Length: 246
Image 1 (cartoon, rainbow, N blue to C red):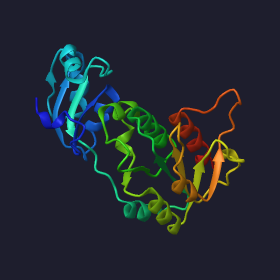
Image 2 (cartoon, one colour):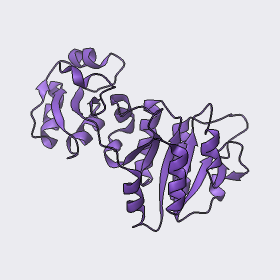
Image 3 (cartoon, helix red, strand yellow):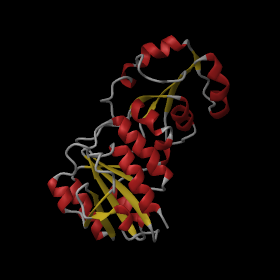
């Protein structure tokens, strides 16, 4: 086994697993493909999208590679991580659009939550995802599996300073909307249209103070008093749905 592809600390390489994640990665020209492992019954499906022949292995071999908890469905792919984009590139892209939105995650650290958020972001035409470089996990197999291949379609920015990033987005014409369970305004009451950046904090701590102070408005999801909060991925999906309404 090529050891450089196993650890999650190597910024440019990883193992993608799961049917949707692997097939989507194989058709993305931005990926550098190193090796494909699959079970015999999946070889035909791999051949439809890749000129690189897979190595046929027993399911137990992939279990050993990824661990018994990984739901790989008989697919594993050694490949490069996706390259991030810069904030300048995002702002340039946004200049061509009258209406668009981006999502900012502050202190959201669980790879599976981020993967689920990515899946929703693509579903609701989010222009890009912005995360903090220092406290956000790198792209991983678990993240890609939760995203069901949608990470191939969402530009991601890893920002050194989220507060500074928010200021630059404001200067570029974005309205900064912070999600806060105690806000008076609901997300449904938010004025639609234009350029919007939604900021979401972690389930426990929420947004950090400086990030929250950078928001133009705070809004909440109107949930039952019986429920203290929603999973951050669920809350993100609802917020993105509301913002994407025409």
